[in-house]
Image (cartoon, rainbow, N blue to C red; front, side):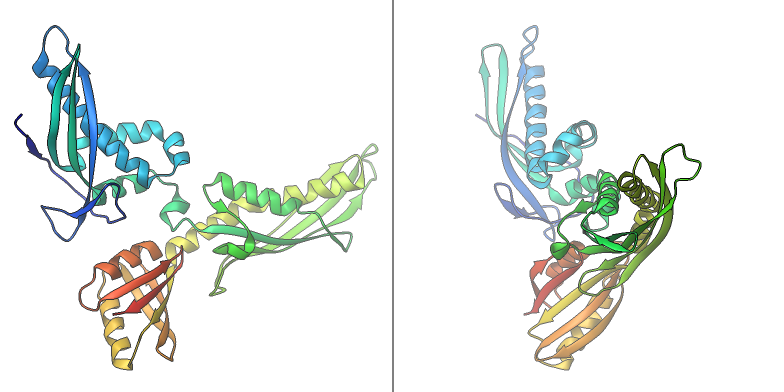
Amino acid sequence: MKRLTLLLPAAVLFAAAGCSGTRKSSLNPAYDTEVVEAEGMAPVVNGDAEGAKKASLHDAMRNALALVVGVYVSQDALVAKSVLIEENITSQTEGYIEKCEVLKEWRDGEFYKVRIKAHVRKEDLSAKLRNLETEPQKLGNPVIGFDIKEFADSKPQQTNYAELELKTRFADAGFMTGEKDKADIIIKGEAETSFNTREGLGGFVSYRAGISVSAVKQGSMETLASMQESAGGIDLNETAAARASLINAAKKGADPLKEGVLKALRERSMVRVNLTNVKTLNDLSEFTKMLRNIPAVRASWVRSYGDGTAVMDVAMQKAGAADLSQLLIKNTARPVKVNRTSSYDLDAELQ
């Protein structure tokens, strides 16, 4: 059986780990493609075998693209955005598949089937997938932790009503939330409520709460945003009224705090780089010059240097630590090995 090779157009750029095999692009060796195998099928309608052949090839290409998407997108995202992914990605194979080789094609009853090997441009695919992400995901997808102490009538409480309300609001906005010790950003501060009055409330009780918190980056302890709000709460007893006031205060301040964090992340895309194997100051100077020549880097500062290790703050234009990691790996001016990457910092080693 004759083999068929199709060359298709491609667009934007990205690099990641492999599905069944990662290879250099034949059109641009600086970038990678995922090589995957997939099958497609289509019914033979009114004896039109040629039409079924073309339809089965298109189905196989869609399946190849879906396979790569499934590796690089979480299951939750696949379910939540299945329609968007279908309409914007898997239905447009020509924009993402660089080369397609037919391995086998055959007639199976009333169906025509084909098996292909496809070279999928990860750069193009990632760029499109990022457009489907929430804004927190585009800004590094930081994990938000919470550490808010609560007081009622000047006494410490074991409750966390304000914290839970803020956590819910941040999660609804697309932020990841988690344990404070493992978070990238900590929302920390105090929420206090006090008895207000029961006069003229027909048996109800009124409490008034105030909340004061700051969003702080772990490690650098940089304050991204702050929020102070107050609100009242009314209920049948003091405990319920105190709880209502704390929740109302947190609810009132959640949106301004969330927007403040997003604004800071947009404006201060700062990545902490821990660079090892820096043997001389000349090595550090060469690396710094290379770093500042990267278009995505706005500025950089050396925080400390000693014993072969330099700690640097790198201000990015619109990217994060993962993007900087890829740029460092691809640079040829000063080879660098990236050992670890999180949302806002990375560990690298001069080669």
